[in-house]
Image (cartoon, rainbow, N blue to C red; front, side, top):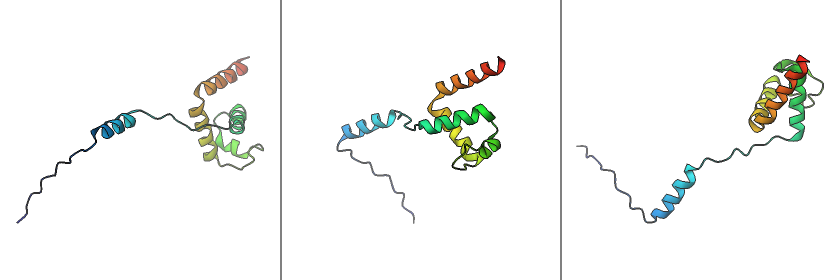
Length: 100
């Protein structure tokens, strides 16, 4: 009634192409997202003034584009991802200013 179909074996005509593609696919690509200087300054100002209070950031007068709290949070996360060392140094400088 039902015939079992066996998967056909595929003949690879150019195995060097397959190997090259596998090598290329195994390399992890670099994250090419960047932050503009304007966005970096915006995020630094907001974090300096409000820390993690995104609702207050949304009401700030420097929020020219009227970003929502969620949009601002995404911008802060993007800045953290693009420049982790710079963000860590910025947070450390804020903590040292508060303790002084």
